[in-house]
Length: 395
Image (cartoon, rainbow, N blue to C red; front, side, top):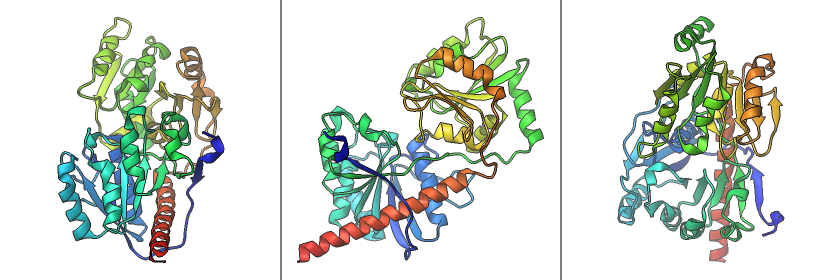
């Protein structure tokens, strides 16, 4: 496939619209512990705050709005528990009763499990008069060809959160995406900037540190691809306290591996696993850290909400990248080669010497406002494309 055949554009802004009804479809939603669920709740809040979009949520289970938002997140209209083909009737009832202008599918999520309904939702929604928009949070693997074909059958307007999305799609599936326009809307923090005072942040830092001198934090889901075990090599047990902030997959043995490493004599009593914490608590821990270390096995980027959350809260971040290298003073992030422990140790050791140039007024709220405006532009395009298709059919 020729590189020029794939079009990825950065979604922009558009003129104000009359109130549109957008149905966000997601298998996971707070309080479910899923990164895409968190993303969807932040998007729903930001869209609602514009005053131009009426948001409906179709998800797995009833939910309460997460804390830390200035604007309330809409509650789910209806729940679909299993996302199997037999649940099509429930989806149809939502479309018929709520009548959205746009059906916006978030894919994949943990809540969908192996159900096939998400792959058919865009096609059914379009058949019932609601154009499809899809956000692809991960690239498609070689075994997902049938699902991708079904999702493309609705001729959707597609959004990606990763600038390297096409490089990650399995080569056998890339021809299916030739000449399809992918709208790039980069991610943002799923947690707010902390509202704690400097003295309150210092108290949290002292409580977590104990007798150690540096507070080193990992923030995010504890999965093997996140490379969290490398913190035991990157940090120094003579000076450092390790804090792992985030949940793990209950069916994964990775947390047990991390805990076994914590029980080594040299790290004994110097490691804390917080498990899942509310966004406000996560924000203050990030603000209290000396460094947030995120040694992702596949490299970090503007799609990683963990990086965004740390940056918003003023933390010095050491992460990995396949595209960037060295220190970025604007974000206070050091990019090291993937799996290069030596470089990450050096970056952590020299982290205190870096000055911060990022605008202190920048906040997650600003980023999500930008994301909401970009989505409104995409919705406008989806409606225009659908209208043009109807006119061609009538002609």
